[in-house]
Amino acid sequence: MLTKIEKAAQVPENTNLVLLASKPENIKTYFLTVNEIAYIKHQKEKNKINSFAFNRLSHWIFVWFIKEDKTGHFLCEECRKAGDALQKELNNLKIESVILQQVGVSPKNILSLAEGLILGNYQFIKYFKNTTEKANTLKKVSIVDEGVTSHDIDKLNILYDAVCRCRDMVNEPVVQLNAKSLAGTFEKMGKEAGIKVEVFTKKKIESLKMGGLLAVNKGSIDPPTFTIMEWKPANPVNKKPLVLVGKGIVYDTGGLNIKTGNYMEEMKSDMGGAALMGSVIYAVAKAKLPVHIIALMPATDNRLNGNAYAAGDVIKMHNGLTVEVINTDAEGRMILADALSYAQKYKPGLVIDAATLTGSAQRAIGKYGLVAMHSKADGAMKQLKVSGDKTYERVAEFPFWDEYAELMKSDIADLKNAGPPEAGMITAGKFLEKFTDYPFIHLDIAGVAFAEKRDSYRNLGGTGFGVRLLFDFIEGYGKLQFPG
Ligand code: BES
Ligand code: ZN
Ligand code: ZN
Image: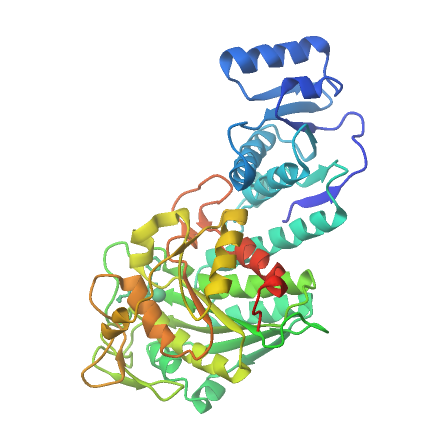
C-alpha cells in the first residue's frame, strides 16, 4: 500500500514530530525544553551525535541534523538517505503517522527527506503467507512548511506512485507477468492516467514484419506484445513528439546461448526498460505535463524450445535491414531495433530508449548511475545530465564514435547482433543507432534497474531508477533549445 503524503497547516498536539535542523540553536522555540536543547547541543558537539528521539509516551519527537559540509544536490541526496534511516526507526517503533518540519534548512531539503522516507518505506511482500506481520507500520507522512506548496506535494505523490509501480513490475516474477500481462498492466495504468493505449498482438506484429521481436519470441510458448501509450495534451510545448522506447524482455534465459551459473537469477528484471518508460509516461500524464509523448514497449520472454532462434540465423528486421545472429543472448537489441524503426513514423523530435541491455554497462560503472550515449541530441543529453545530478539518478555519458559501428558489421548480413568483448555497451548502442533517423539517446540501465541488496532508499529488487530522472527532464523539455 502507498504511504500517504500530505501538507498540514500546523503541528497538532500529541503527534509524532520530526524536526530537520542544521543547528541546535534553531530549535529553541520548538516543543523541547531548554535542558533538552542543551543536551542536544552537548551531544552533537562532543559526541557528534546527529539524531535524537524523545519519548513523550503519547508521541515521539525526533530531531535530525543534516550534514553542513554538503550543499546543492549532494545535500538533497543526504536528506533522502536520512529519510530512509528515519523510516527504519519509525517502523521499528511501530509508528503509523508522522509530521515533518524543518527548522533553519530549506523546504527543498524537507521534501527530499520525505521522498527518501516514502521511497524507503516501499515493500514487495505480497508473496509472504502473513503479509500483515511483514508490513511496515508507517502509513502517513505530513509536511508542515510554508515553503512547500501543494504542487510540490502532488508531484511527490505522483512520482512516488510511479516509482512504486515501476518497482512492482520489475519485482513481479515471469510466472505472473508475461508479455501479455505486462501489456495489460500498461493498459490499466493508461486508463488511470488518461493515456491512450494500444496493444499489438502477434498477428499485427507479424503484419508489421517486426522480425527481431518475432525471432526472439520463437522459443516462447507465449505470444509477444507491442504496447503503444500516447499522452497528447492540448497545446504541447513540442511540435514533434518525444518517443520513449523500453526493452520488455519479461524473462531472459539467454535462449540457446543459455545463461550459465547465477547469471539467470535476476532476469525477471529484463523488462526494466519497459517498466521505466511505462511509469514515466504514467507520471507525466498524471501531472498533466504539456509535452506530447509516445511510449513504445516491445515485449516477449527469451526462452528456448525446439523452434528457438539460433546463432547463425539471419533475421530481416522491421526496416528491412538484415541481422546475423551471433548470440541469442543479445536479444534486447533485436526487439528494440524494431521499436526504434517503428518510431520513425512519428517523425519524433527526440527518441530515448531505456534497456537492461548489457553486462558491460553494469561492469563499467556499477549501480551508481546509468550509462548513456547519444547521436544528434547534444542539447538534450546535456539537460539529461543536469536532471541526473538533480535527482541523483546520474547519467554517465560514453563515447559513441563511428569506429564502434565497424565492430557490428557482418560478412553475410547488414549487421551482426554481437561484437567483440570490448566496449559491449557502446557496440550495442551503435547497433541500435542503425535503426534511427532522428535525435537519439540510448540509456543502458543494466547496472541500476535491479539491486542485489538494499542501498538506502533504493530497496532490494526493482529500484525504479530513472523515473525521477526522466520526469525531471520532461518537465524542463519545453525549455530545451530544440524540443522538436
Ligand atoms: N539482459 C542482458 C543484460 C544484463 C546483464 C542485464 C546483467 C542486467 C544484468 C542482455 O540481454 C544480455 O544478455 N546481454 C549480453 C550481450 C552479449 C551476448 C553480446 C551481455 O551483456 O553479456
Ligand atoms: Zn540476453
Ligand atoms: Zn536481456
